[in-house]
Image 1 (cartoon, helix red, strand yellow):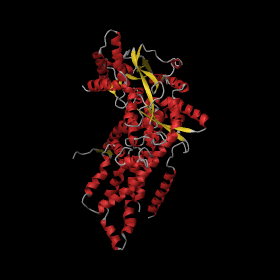
Image 2 (spheres, chains in turn cyan, purple):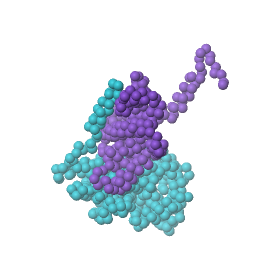
Image 3 (cartoon, one colour):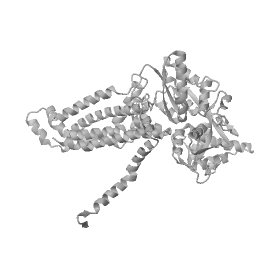
Image 4 (cartoon, rainbow over the protein chains, first blue to last red):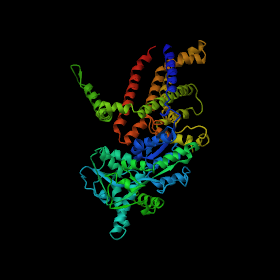
Amino acid sequence: MNRIKFFITLIIFLSILMTACLPSPSNGGGKRTITVYAFSVMKESLEKEIYPAFKEKWRKEHGEEIEFTSSFAGSETVVNQIQQGVPAQIAILSIERDVTRLIQSGHVPSDWYVTAQKGIVNKTPFVILVRKGNPKGIQDFPDLAKEGVKVIHPDPVSSGGAQWSILAIYGSELLKSEKAGAKDEAKALETLKGIWKNVVSTPGSAREARTQFETGFGDALITYELEGLLMKQANAPIEVIIPKSTIFSEHPVAIVDKNVKADERPVIEAFRNYLWTDEAQKIFVKYHFRSVTNDKLNENNPEFAKIELPFTVQQFGGWDKAYPDVIEKIFRDQVQKK
Amino acid sequence: MSSVRHVRGFDIAKPLSIFTMVGVMLPLILLPLASIFIYGTSSGLDKFWQALIAPEAIFALQLSLVTSFWATLFNVIFGLFAAYVLTKYKFWGSNALTVIISLPTAIPTAVAGFSLLLLWGPYGLLGRFTDQYFHIMFTAFAIILANIFVTFPLAFGVIKPVFETMSQSLEEASATMGATRWQTFWHVTLPSLRGAIVTGALLTFARAIGEFGSTILVSGNLASRTQTAPLYIFAKFNEGQVEAANAIAIVLALFSFFIFSVLFFAQSWLDKK
């Protein structure tokens, strides 16, 4: 009998303890918090420098302490989370199409950008990462279609980076053939098919893909240039291969109106606008994103590669056309389905 | 039957079978666990400790403990109640209810997660009416709900068989001696269920604390807000911070080791009268 009493006492004690230490968000209340959901590779620049710098700026200008909290995943996953109702106030996405999805679901207003950059906050070219010494002799995208090359490629269903990568491969083949005489769509499709045949894994985000590559899996990874430069900075045994022609991915920022209360709007808008200041753009350049406001800033980073034939999503007529024409009609219908 | 050869009382089958058993366990369970410990501490205990006391990590562990506790408390009490009802009374649909309670064992945890979202999410069946007054999804409550869902059958599954084998005569004797139902339950039924209740609670707790698939969907995965320990591990692994992921993984591994040790040694103590 005593044992039962002991258990009941124990349970009551534990209940009190557990109620007491139900962890409250670390900011200890009072402080206002900005909730950011961003695509995977934004992590370092935001958490290490952008957040602290903006906090400091806001404290100086308004005498108020603010906090940031964030979650990172593949761009398409972020959009799905927001559409399911996560309390995101700022969305930093990999592809503009994802902003369009949020506009369609009523989370973001159709007049979502205010700057001349049309909501694009930074950019970076798509490159190929290979093992040290480049044992498979990869020089450009078509080499990834060679037999025996194991390619890691994020999943276009959840990752924006994966969609950039597909546009990079397809677009670079088009552009190169165009420069050589005539646009060769059949050859571009063949290259895409050949590379996809070699894909051994499709992780959910560009960052997951990098972690897989880092743990020793695969021969090559197509990803954002900044991922390669961050890995080199950490002395990872890899090489960055710059394709002759490749796409510059451009990353939009949008305010998720639905989750912003009237009294929060000033600080949220100030944070969004801050991302286009020289201070923030310099931080992005430091973390290997390229500035979209001032090309001069990009000279501060000596690691940036020069691309012979660069292009943007405009080559396909913007995301409104690129998504149905290339990702759906070419990749999904012709490459993925055999 | 083939004869087992005994050479001066030495049974070759004994070392052989132990060796085989450990040999099978080694690559499947022991080495993977060992690699967490080796990798987690490979860059020095100092780094390991740093990873452990990171505020986000501590928060994640705390959140996991608290949410698992509430889910366990609920499921043990409900499991006890449901087992009582289903063994005492036979009624139309009672078998169906037993099956339904056991269902979450086979349902993928991700399905558990989005079924909750489809119900309580801001655009869910009920959530679209209730979410403007109080939020359930993407808070600690959502994590508790998900934990309750996926561990629902565990305590019930342990308690019900004990109920069934419990001798009716004891309870009947108690009743003839003039005890009320409540007294019978309190003084006769409950004491014989001690072992089952503790086992059920620890199993439920251990399962809840490691829950991943459903919580990643319903929690929103915000660091220091709704990120549980398993989500923290996943996030750190994806960011390439494998050491940080490992530090917390070690804590969880030690924790389950502790739970199952308690389970093992407490059994005899509980069975004592």
